[in-house]
Image (cartoon, rainbow, N blue to C red; front, top):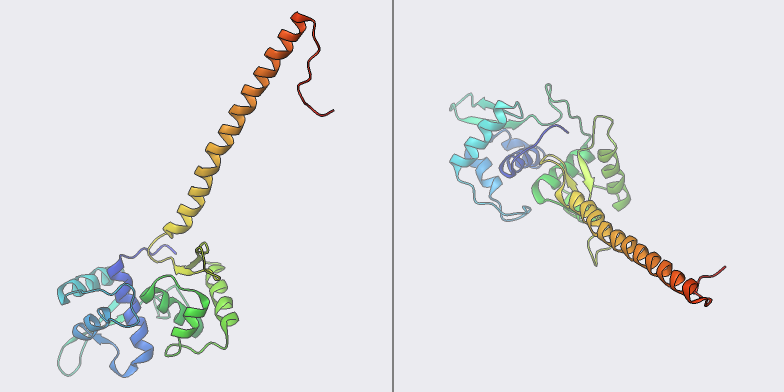
Length: 223
């Protein structure tokens, strides 16, 4: 995806997506309701403490990128906000209900395993089993338009991989994992090559000395 969001933008979009499904009678959200949703202590990781001013600035940033729309209440003129990241007339991202639930949870709670996603998804979408969650994640990774989810390297002591959304840029831990492997293997290969060169020089020196002395030498190589 060519969409890169700040942590505050991720939280605002995630909350709007969540509340559109879990509390449709209160959606679109007022600034007060959206701020409360952003600062919830449950179902959020990390827990944030955003003021209304910060939330409103974030909404304006998203609005300028056509990722949030503002509506004015017909009765009281209070502004209300809706998300335009996916499944709207102008959005290019189309998600089915299962995919929508997964993306929402990843936006709100960060990296999670299929089991965690299934356990936490009941209010958004009911998955039959972990296999269905994994299949949904695979579909989000293999999208023709580009992945919106990435699988992270398995953590030590964990049986399952965690998955993370890609709306905040490339996932650092994936890149770091690959970079770490490359950087750690390169010095080891250099050291081996250096030792082999030194051994070759020593063997040549021993052979030369033996030739001068007229003595046979066994360097221990197998035929």
